[in-house]
Image (cartoon, rainbow over all chains, first blue to last red; front, side, top):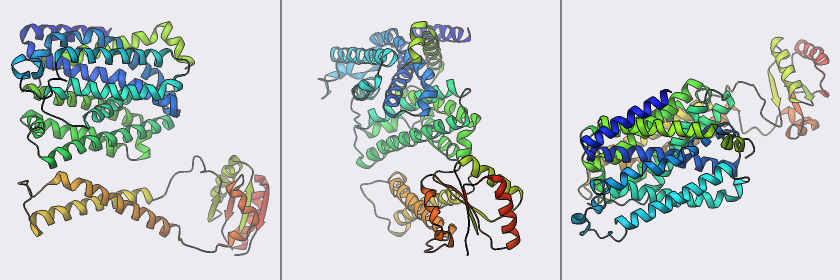
Length: 338
Length: 165
């Protein structure tokens, strides 16, 4: 009931924001969409990986990861507002600006829409395989390959192309690491009450490994761009270090890496329910901040109530839809013998 | 010293508990797998953490000092205090010092390398790498050894050996 109220309220405020000033709404919606498409995709990736590696962590997290995958259908209605918001969001979608772009053969509206349709089709097929497949392990290598390629290209299309001059070949991998980290943190939040101390220690080690992977990739992008010092790439960081974004950048480094890293170092802390739950909650909050930090400065915006409303509205819908669908008999039955 | 072999982990765990309660020791175990439920009391993780942080800090300080004070040399108009480019070296030196400290402290704490130990005289100790769970009472005091033998009668070991040394 709380969930329904939260998402109805969030959506109502977001719609009001759309009426009020559409530019702000579209960027807030895009930030929320990157986050709540990352949840089902990351959950899918973790389920596919677990079908190949096995391990206690996957047994514990499976119900929560299935909830994440079940929120996938929300993407279909959620991408519709973007169709209306392409030209306010993307410089390459505006005829006056697109003419000067060397990469206009890739960044144009018809090709963008076609790629988007391909990503969605691949994700729905993979979601179906993960939820209903009898022996996922047979499909998992191909599935993970497809997922890696589509999420890389989707990250490039959705957020990297906000600045059509910015290129970073590690961008998709950073997005993928963020997705896996978000999905794992959400699953830990949904599961931690039931996990035993030994299981929590496994989850803590996985969180630690993903936090290290994420900071490695994200720092490498910064280092390479800083050292090459090119006028096409550096503005991306300059936009994101002015005003409130400069403080947010430091907050993300601390909350997304320093705190989780030192909290999860000791085996005793990994086994503590309070530590695991608060680290997972912190990481989800940091992924939200990072999605704003990635999207909003590209449009010269600061963060305001429209962004919060979009995040709460879409997040409430995703969690509500995922947990409602996962409890349907047709999904619940499959969960037992995968 | 006395060396007792148990068939299962539970037997050894029960013996450890009794020997500790009776304060007979020092005790040493030889097992095919880590004993469950034994508190990890090794100081090595803490040594590695401190050494790693020290190595990383020292490496950062050395780079900052040499680029800004000792050999200030402008490169491509970038600031002299180029902290981002110090990080890979900081990380590598941190790992190097941490691993070296871990390896050396492992040797020191376990008094290695040690080429001979009286317990090696026991042929049955080889089973510690397969299926034997061993308890060693490493004392030479006759009174303690007698008490240990009495205690072992209750604990049902598969085999008990007395060794010199």
